[in-house]
Image (spheres, rainbow, N blue to C red):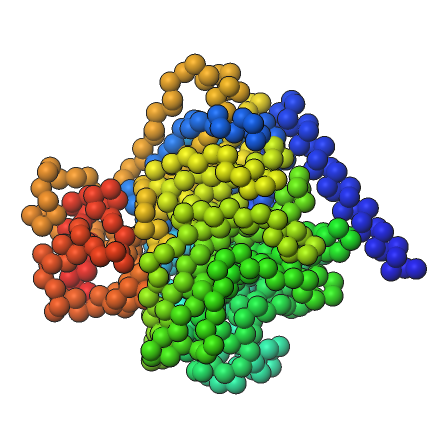
Length: 630
């Protein structure tokens, strides 16, 4: 009897929640109220749904660019956008900006100067709470920044970059605390999740994602020594069950990546979602997707919480193994596992000859996870379709250096998918096949339009009911970060990050820029005005030097090091130790300076074309000088 009562209560609760979202969408379609996007995935439960309905399947074709703001000349740009009170907050690897959400006018820019050498120049955004912004840095720091002025409120060193620890994730905010985990699985860190006081930065608790000694799961590392550098980092953001006081943590791959025989056992808690008590950090439960992984199939994206049609509390998990999983949050049993990209797994672990795997190490679901469409009652997710040949190698652990234990060679063909799944059964309702990888945020709206983007630089608008492409707009750069929707002054906006250089972008790299769109017919204030001018921030790469080609310019190795970190480290390693690309150490003994310049200017099809659109002639000369000195 009690069980039936609980089930009925859950069903009523789920029905009421969905009804509220439906009513909200109808209300916004009429008199549009100001609506924010206050966190990476909009809500703490990770659903990424917008109740705005001014933009519909009928009028989305009229979406126009309102303004854009160049953030940098080149580099990674994977930040999730946050919009509060008409201000968008965003980051690149070092800088944090506040930008007007209707005009792209920069209000302030906080420039962080690294105190130690960066491990990996990347950041995925800020958390906002109590008038402060919180973010991590590539050299292991945690910053609190005043949201009004852009001034530093406090700064703490919470990791050791000499060990390969850095902080690319967006913190979760919970009752006066920040929850954040260290990235650096591929450098052989021992992963951990920590909580900090929002006012002081003081550490409140920590949980190690690689257990040792008497900790739960330590026995899953038969080679106990390997747990000391076992990986298990986190690199996007986290999900909160506010009612239960639980934080859902996606945990990355074990290290070394491609030599599972070096670390026999299940290797908890890698490739898992770990559920912790948000107040104390105590382990509550976990669900592992790929034990003793040797293919780099970690869980990078934040899980998404939802209720199924029976009123059961569920969590949807997107993984780099190419599947979306649904797990019951009470019974901890898996409800389904649905493939959302090509799946062809090898029959044995990588060896020196190599094994072919689909997806490869940069395939599947990357750093933006499932969304929940309340209008259509479905899970929506983007994925990368990219296979690779994976080879194992030697294991040589050196603190602060990549510990991959091999290499991979990716296939020539690559593409992306957007999939809509039934939330009860996992059955695919529709799929859209994109020409390029889809790693950007996927955002369904009450107007029946689902927004996302691809790494070829296209903003995509799909019909939420059937996946039909409604709009495909070239933005000038790869979409690798947030795609959000909010309302100001009676107008619905869509804001995106455009421009990104990484191992996933080989087409339209572009210059990192914030771009804002809206329907022209609903913009009473600017309907007949000229497009707003692009507002440029100071460039980090040097300006072009006349018409001289790179080979005739004198390179600055110090300046080239910064350019290298932004554009080359993802493939060649932060210190030139090699990763997916060849090692560059000792390059001076193999190639002349002129040959390195030529290599950058005319790369093979395995390298991105950076010159001249991304790097100008002087920048090429500078990065060549740096590489020649490695």
